[in-house]
Image 1 (cartoon, rainbow, N blue to C red):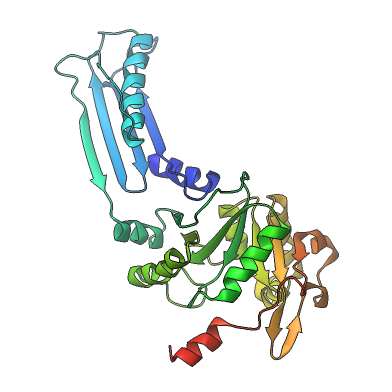
Image 2 (image 1 turned 60 degrees about the horizontal axis):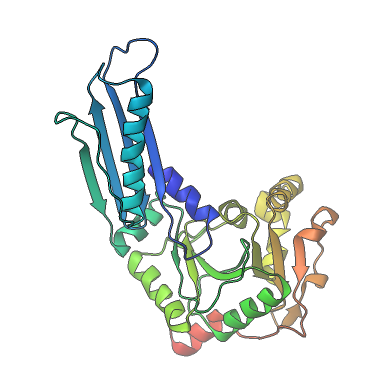
Length: 307
């Protein structure tokens, strides 16, 4: 339960904010006598810590309201500990009602492995400096960033002038048609953003409709070549209606696509060159060529560097 809550909190929070997931369940006193124990379980999850505890109460010693109060005090203390807030706690329990506690700590490698395994939905590296925009919306430039270059940095900078939001880069550790990144590979890519002072999110969602579910209400910055693939039924099993259904779903949860021009086979393409279905016209927003054009690519850089 705490892990589910932690993942939900990650989706709802601004990049870089610390979040905690909290789980609680129990079987306490009721109007009818219980056959089993009166007990409760609670847990907290943060980026580097999972803490689980259970308490079995003495039956017949307290009313339901009193058991609620005891369990609430334990839960509040657990939340305070997870948030590293000092709290005074004097539990109203006897010597037999000792909490059964378990704590597990995670380092960065373990957290990234949990991401690859699908246990957590993302890991945020908040390297950006300065005051973050007062907006819940994210402006996300997704890619492999192998390597990160000036074109990426400039494109996201221009996009944030067109649409307000918190600028973020995003890398999916899981690829649709390639092996997943390893933990060392992820950390190597992340180091680029640390040097550049830019926030990057590592996720495990390679498809944009899944990214939209992970980052509802966000604007995704893409090239015209990617936009062309997004509206091509070929990538939806040849089903035009399926393509519309998926992309309209992205629109319904508040997502948009900011489309920059891209040099494709020697021809510079912009959004206006694409055949966008009428139902999706307002899903795509053009980044004018006069505001952004940089004819460089990671593939060409890798070739020159012999990577």
